[in-house]
Image (cartoon, rainbow, N blue to C red; front, side, top):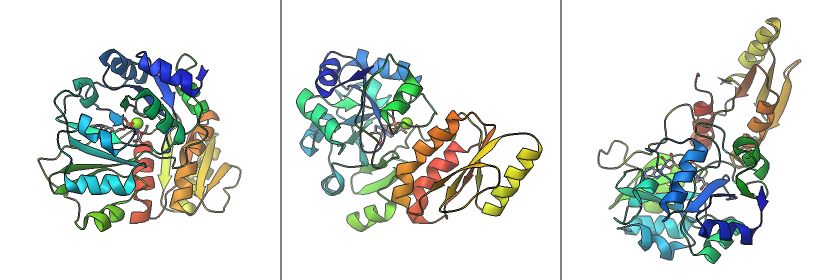
Length: 316
Ligand code: TXA
Ligand code: MG
């Protein structure tokens, strides 16, 4: 069922779950201080209880409600990138529900930039726990229609249009003076290095990993094969059609694959990110036997896209 902003705020204050737009992907939101509401998120998503949730806040002044420490390095990142697609993992205040933290000593915080998300945060006064509004391991939604298709009509959805960024936020954990990249996103590692003046810690035992970062995530239902080389993709398509199997292809930039449905994506990482999940949702709906996807170059500008595609394409 679709709801407007005022209805969304009422439901959230009432301990109900509402799917809301953010600039990255749609989130399945609930009052982060209401444990019954939080449990509904896990149950609707069929998400394991050991995978913590991001708490969305209205602005930087709310960090102290959730985090026990806000080191200068984290503050610098927040000031530079909030509102926006950056999540900071910080030591949690002890009162933060264990259900949000999934037992971790830390809490993940983000100020989203989508105007409707900010409106809801400001008028409800709540911190909103919101994972991506999809079932566990499936593709994240970038439109209200994707949410309905994935979660069904019973879940309340606020339609805020198509998400501008299109893939999930960059996650950085900060402990004292050190930071670590937990999930690639459109704010890339180079930007964080430039701002903090120091490289990421790579193998630091004290800093937590993002527990949700296992392989086979972000997956369409249709088996997905990845190709570094377009000629091999075309050959794979030919082989499939000789076996009477159907397929479609996602290409980067112009091009065609004979007798195969093709979606051409942008050459630019930012534009491609915006298009990616919609294209995968659209091809998935065709219920073909295989999806063939051309990979972008293995260089830092494409790190987030390569990360999502490699997880989506992991062998089932
Ligand atoms: O862009 C986004 O981040 C979207 C929108 C809705 O904000 N949200 C999102 O949430 O992608 P989700 O739950 O699908 O992914 C959050 C990731 C998970 O991999 C989770 O394990 C990690 O963040 N995470 C959350 N809290 C954490 C914590 N305290 N420590 C480490 N990782 C954490
Ligand atoms: Mg997710």
